[in-house]
Length: 587
Ligand SMILES: Nc1ncnc2c1ncn2[C@@H]1O[C@H](COP(=O)(O)OP(=O)(O)OP(=O)(O)O)[C@@H](O)[C@H]1O
Image (cartoon, rainbow, N blue to C red; front, side):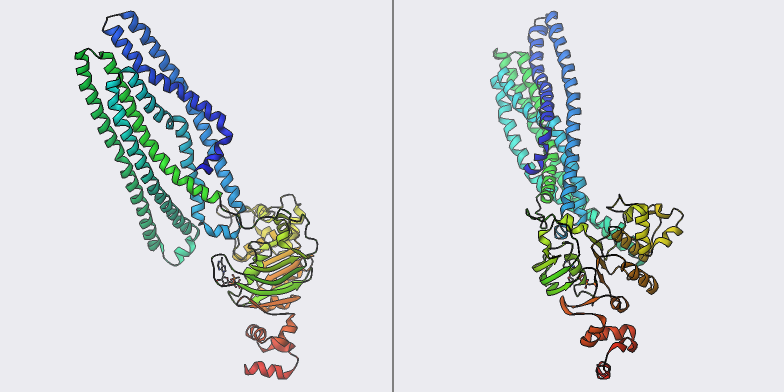
């Protein structure tokens, strides 16, 4: 809680101002029973109209003062609450932006969204209330008791016994409620997660006729959310009846003892009325305290969830001495690289070593799950190696500034994402200053320019929800154009040509040759691999072989099998000796 509240520091002056305004309200509220006592004892009982008019007028004037302070306090409280929420969301967003893929794995997407929205709103409400009523209620309770003691000690003792007992009860309830509210927030995560999956996966759900099942799943989770919320609400709602019962018993006792005191001549009617007035105001303050208890318990659970994100240690950060040098050539060297995904036991890559000259094209081939994507993701440091080193232009990438490293890399991941906006926005993503000619050239090289020109709005065609829906191959080529526009020194294509026909792919590969960059292409297609300067053949996370198409045909049995399975025997024509050919036949 303390960490999350530290973001209130910049608004300390405003908070003090709000509390000062609240104090004015409080003082008026505490003074009014005394005024009432004076009006009754010196005015009504003695039939002195002057006293009634004078103190009545003061009561009305101070009520206006309290009213004006209350309104000003509300404005300030709303301002601080909203600013605080804004800052909290901003810091959360910045923190999440700095997350590595490992950090992302620690939270579900739905949970991060709930934390940035609902949890921040809970904190915002809590800050508003703390400035508006949270302090006022306890202060009214404490000073109400002090003032009641000042008016009549014996009568006020009833309140001195009843109120602390109630406070202990309230604090106990508050602790219990905080645990229950954190369970509600967890269930809210779950509901959001199912909603998100359903909206994102609507196509699949419809195709697999899973709507009824999904509705059932959502209803069950939604019901659990409702049940948990009702449990906690029912729990906190028991507070009010207990509170009213205890305070009403206290008021009856004050009346009963007060009557005896008046008869004995040790109390005046006005004093009894004043103590009862304090008791009534304290009852109202305690009711507000219940409301605060609920908001505070909920906010405590939310604060913890927000703090979990804010204090997450980002595992990939720049070293203090990180070199500010930019990548000039694009030579890449893997030295005994092993890699294990966090929270995974098996190694995804094992002792992989190879080096690639600048401007070479490298094809990465291997069966599914052999570690191709993992290898690619290590180059821009989306993950850090578990063992070994990766060097670019002779520098360990951990010694480079991430910003410089990534600026030199054009990465087209396997799971493509186009942002809502125009095709232009998507291609120029992060490179808004480039000229139209450069953008068009990148689109032409990515073999998507003609398709774009066929859209009525051309490059200004909106994609996504409110625009055209693109095919997988079109998305792939726009993503490639997005990478090419950066004029990268290193281009990483993770199975990014899988949806392209042979001719388009050949044209793309031809166009890529005009870029002076080192290119890694993860592919399943021998036709693509054949075009590369070097082929890396992976199996179970290990580098099985490295070489050109011809070399691997001669030396690697698995490669020959792949070639034969895709190109038939003709593909093996490069095998030099018939003996080798026969060998493959036998296999
Ligand atoms: N985020 C992850 N957390 C844990 N393990 C993972 C993760 N991603 C991949 N793996 C595991 O790492 C291994 C290598 O996966 P990788 O995605 O690199 O293979 P790949 O060769 O690219 O496969 P494909 O051709 O299917 O894309 C697999 O065993 C996979 O289960």
